[in-house]
Length: 268
Image 1 (cartoon, helix red, strand yellow):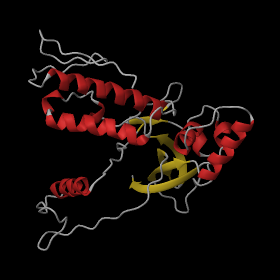
Image 2 (cartoon, one colour; image 1 turned 180 degrees about the vertical axis):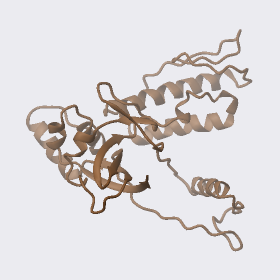
Image 3 (cartoon, one colour; image 1 turned 45 degrees about the vertical axis):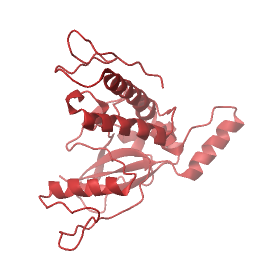
């Protein structure tokens, strides 16, 4: 991992990291915990930049998730070390240079992961708390006597999160998630995707959110062409699709047969 860990300042008691941020309060955490926290934050920032901005990851998704989850566990164990600048306190990604930005009317949040029944039960607990419902006793999620909640499970398309704004049924703006508050205006590029209608059947004012992705067949076709031309192969369909969409020239996007999967509708 190409990361530089900071060090605890024994005189000030603050906790600087490689970005210059610091926790202004004293901490009683061991020095090795503080060093590991700073190392993990630097590593997560580095890999977020590679994945979300440059579309060129240098570790697997599972390896990145392991780093992020270790950081989350350490911060839960030492909440006094959490800073607003920590990667756990914001949505990953940022607008790329040279592209107009868009401020989302409603923040676009990222999805979280669960790898065990205990993590699913913890999610159920957060849902119940948010709804003002009593917690379900372990190990059952909804035992007899507890308020039963209905969940829907569906496949996730691993693409680039996009918001589409329609006014009176016409597509007027499309943007990436970016940092969750501000994204990149990629309207012209989105218009080249056949799966995204330029006009709805009804003259509605709505925002549609979903994922732009590269189908596996298109990914294989492009890599075959690159191999024949002696060019480096793309790493995976997700990053290839994201890179294809985030082009200055819409003709580049049009040459890639991207698709779209909508999953959320916001009425304005």
